[in-house]
Image 1: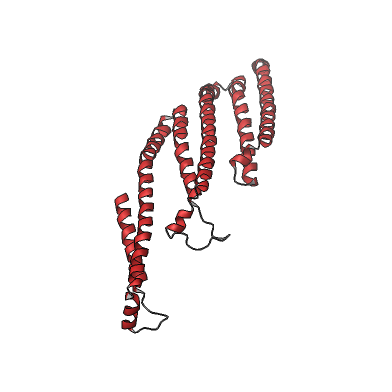
Image 2 (image 1 turned 120 degrees about the vertical axis):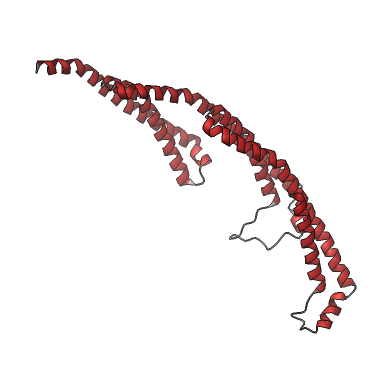
Length: 275
């Protein structure tokens, strides 16, 4: 009994100190969480990262919980050590040291990636405004690609929007590669960097292929319309329709059919050459 009392009296200060550390950790964690949530809401980071109000709220709460966990995690090795649980505190100390050693790289990668998003967004908006000023969307009408009139249920993507989105991705990829290199997690970064490098390498080829296909569509439009007008000019469509002796409503239109075939063949040729 005396041995137990002596052991308890020797361990009691460490136990009490461990409890004090635990309370301090929880209080500081709550304070950090509150500060992060309020700061995130004031800076409106949730709205910038989320698509709607619910996403913004979830992101804000997630950042707050992450700050709480990191704060408590910093105190855990000392708490377990006070409780005499060295078998838990020793590996946890190594893990915490590794984690906090990784934080500067994580912050650096995050800042670089955030800067990349800002730059890519600015470049996207400038390029989109430039294309709109050049009225490139009129090319769809000249190429016969205007299609049906868009409605609220079927929104269409303009050439300016598409060009801006493509340039956004192109500008962002180097920043993503640099951010992954800063993290230096080889099992993740090496395959990801290799994949992004491959994407970067084929981007010029895709752009050239897209330009060639657009050129093919334009040429197909011009030649197809020319063939259709020539056939109509010589009256071949009317003669063929009269020879087939079909009702006017269902008459075969030689000029239009030939024009469509010519357009399809020219576009197919340019598509094959592009790839």
